[in-house]
Length: 169
Image 1 (cartoon, rainbow, N blue to C red):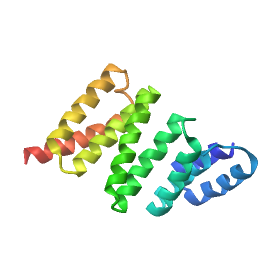
Image 2: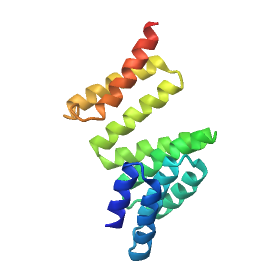
Image 3: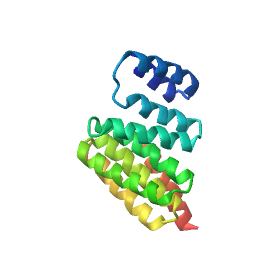
Image 4: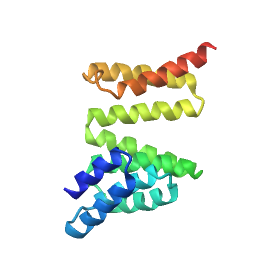
């Protein structure tokens, strides 16, 4: 229950309150890396990439192959944290590991989110034509998988629209 409460608070941007619930969860149950995973999110929300990396590595060590969804969450956050501190090779490896984990999971929604995040990264790197191709492929995949009605598609369409506008200038 403490993990669920902490998750809700993190999603609502209340990192300090979430940390309180995580302290409670750590004392009451074996959470096999989930507390560290959530601490990774809190550190990310607080814009503390060093702490994010520390907790993320702890989480990955404890999660191992137990829960692919939690590992994917941590790897997404680690990718951003490594990038934020200029550790590009490690960011690339975390992103590569993320794609492997998503493939292992067979979770279509998680794959959609990771594909959108990859398109966003490509866009920030200035690879506009590649980003257009990625957005088209992700859109086609979402339609095929019956996921085009999800709210997260707005994120994809926003990236695609920005890139199209930039290419047309």
